[in-house]
Picture 1 (cartoon, rainbow, N blue to C red):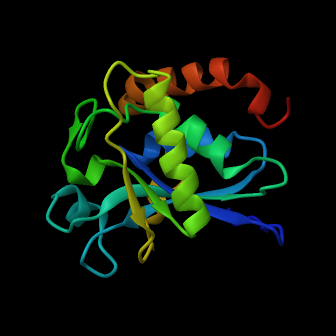
Picture 2: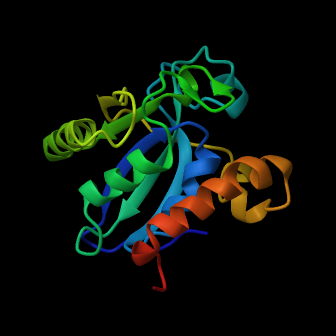
Length: 185
């Protein structure tokens, strides 16, 4: 479903492992107007899911988050992002292993780059995680939307095993921790 984006919409591009796991979370945040799963950071134009999963294209599975900065800030987006996945593991999220599952923030402006660096430093200083954060901070590159069946995957496939075992617990943890930031609250 395509949503109309407000005139002041900003864009955040985030890689936190499998895009199915993080897309559903950002869809639920107040101020987020659209989330699109896709690929960024590689060399092939218009890569397919199968090509990206091979680990040979250099792409990461990402989500592009369209948000209204009057409702939610880029820093708040990053605080959620750095909490809902493990940003301390290099090229891995759970059983998903490879550079396509790396943790990365692809910035769209020098301001986003600064905020990303500051937020990671703050999380490290406050020892939010037991190990240092290894999330990459890179310039945004060409974005390629994933195939249609990957969009809204969790919403469209809630009974699928991966959704029940891997994604549902992440969503429950997110809802509990960020209840005040959810749409409709």
